[in-house]
Length: 243
Ligand code: UGY
Ligand code: MN
Image 1 (cartoon, rainbow, N blue to C red):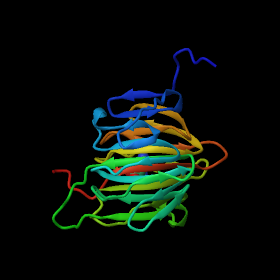
Image 2: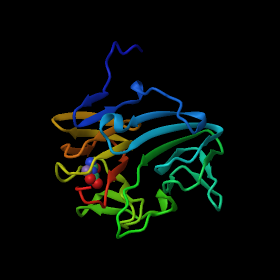
Image 3: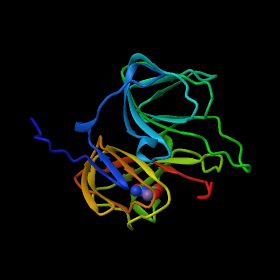
Image 4: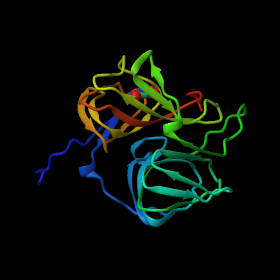
């Protein structure tokens, strides 16, 4: 049905909510037989880029000069790493800047992709390549709340200058505080839905939505409905705020 110009998407100084009805696909250099929906980039003031890549069977993504994190939302991909590896839904990989590792879709595949220039520090060596699966990461309750489980997908190691986690809320569970912090977030809703407070706005959100939160954006979430709500969340991490 025609929405007569209405959408839940919103663009405010310190946050963006993007809903699937407003997604626009674009080709990207390095992507063959596939398109991208670029959710956030430095054009918005962010220190990273996040996009959803839709690849046809046999579609490829060439290496980039930034670090890259890829989470398989659906389908299956092959990594042309030194040792070939296949990743199915829930599989993820971290590929360091300039590491020569291309990606090929083994079937129609949808990927969440995060890219960020690496911020080296003298006390930690740069990471290289990491492969994992979200299902085999043990969850930990946030602030002792068993109904809010966090799965930390990257190692607790200062070599990594960002973190990516999943957060799973049982129906009715919520963040225990309104968070205000220096880190920015890229957030992709994977399952369920609820209410997200961003700045001075409260939004209904559902699986498929993307949210960018700028540093210090007040944020709070409560899961609503009969199924758990789950999101994939990026944050800059492990670096002193003064460059
Ligand atoms: O890691 C975080 O800062 C996370 N708790 N933020 C959020 O869920 N909005
Ligand atoms: Mn947060």
